[in-house]
Image (cartoon, rainbow, N blue to C red):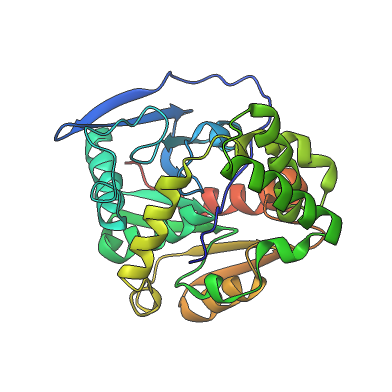
Length: 302
């Protein structure tokens, strides 16, 4: 079984926003945080198995003319579950969490931005609740289906030395070394596989140490159980879609190209000299395209 961490990064900014707020779904809690004012934009982070904290800087960047919302996916961060197990973690439940969040916030519709695995979750939400979305942004997406599992391993992008070092620290962790130092060393080698600009490794490596790998495996198991494939549903999704991908990254360009061919109303932007984090590696392109897209599709008052 091949598990993937389609993750995201964090870097230091002064964030002016509300603290995380919570609401309940049955006996579970979902935590979210809002930035700015204007037409709502939900940002779905990558993972699976990571909290949303790393997306606060991006939410701040995009909040100049919009209300941006990040949230901790079930079982991560402040979104605590009464029982955390394979039965309480599934794509269906994660889709319903998003819809319950929209209802909680009182929005009739919103724009949805999904990054990496969050792109896959955005596809699933759009398939079930297309009428609730006015536009969608697919940011370095994991894809419409499970083709990403059939492609080259992410670690194939590493040098032999980097792969050997990654394997060494992975073995130490499996053998019981739970020190932060070892986790961080492993994360530093792994993070290099996601970046074109290797100088950014220190900015993202810490995030690799924080994921819940058991939760990650439950989600990927569920994706395979349901034979995840949103291609048919997205052929009839006529809302505007912006697809962004790095030319040299963990999420193959072919996934973005396939989505662009399927959507009836999409724009594809491939960013040169860019890995998995467009807003860090090519902010000149990424932020320009996203902000322009938001401006064009945020004309209605919610």
